[in-house]
Image (tube, rainbow, N blue to C red; front, side):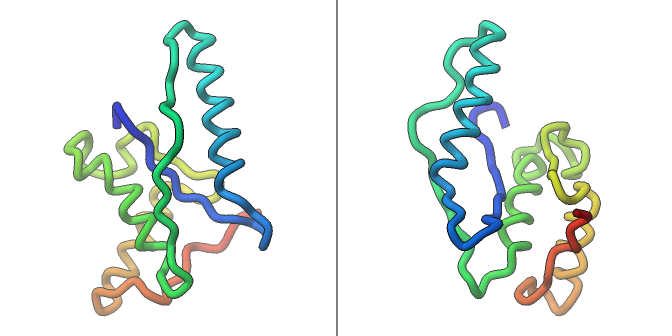
Length: 117
């Protein structure tokens, strides 16, 4: 995506806060970008789409990893160089999404693969 980014993140504690996380992420990536001479990277603010407690995380993950495919940049999420995770491979995420989709066409109640931590 040449003009925006999609991020799926989860809080690790009850006190996790998305706003400082995004602010720090934008600050650090924006600094590295400008240090390379490319100027300003991010506009102020962000659009937040939170998963509901009764919604499977796979609904959001499917949207995020399939975005480059919908944009016709690649034919599979694993072929998009900027797709990644600190916990799972793109293939693990795609397999979990596919398994959920094959279970009666619903993703509710399906869990993401266990952390390798």
